[in-house]
Length: 199
Image (cartoon, rainbow, N blue to C red; front, side, top):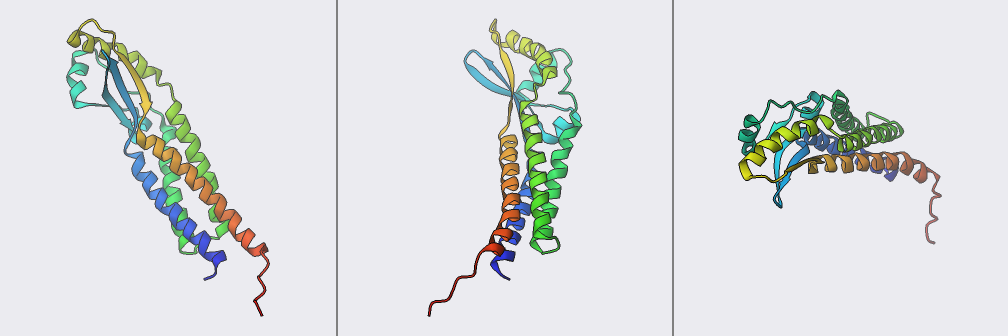
């Protein structure tokens, strides 16, 4: 196997591995809801990519009692388009595997990885920048319970991206770059003039 075939296959294999990692990251927390009060910050809830897609929120054990003492709360609104992140990650894994074993042309693998990496990155930026106003409406009831517990301090709750969401964004960008490499390297190597042997 020559360099023109080796680099795209290794590139595809690495992309396939990243696709598997992205599938796992979808089931880890993407969003954290933290409460800041009296100079201390405490995580009170979190949601995985799957939970954000279906509109669920996992309340931390420490905050569960306060949440039960507060009014009934609902999780974030369902955002089913986040399921596309899972589909993109699975497609990256399959494309990478097929490219690694040579069942897919390097140009098609590269183009597929560019599109899937771009779609995944855009969805992750959306996931990390969603305002979650429905959580802000829930915050006063949870904060009120906390205020009753620790005194007349005005607690503030805020939603922030979790490390798994940031890692997913970075990995989708890496897949995008690997797709570009998969597209460019074969054409660069085919246009390179063979070197003359020394006499």
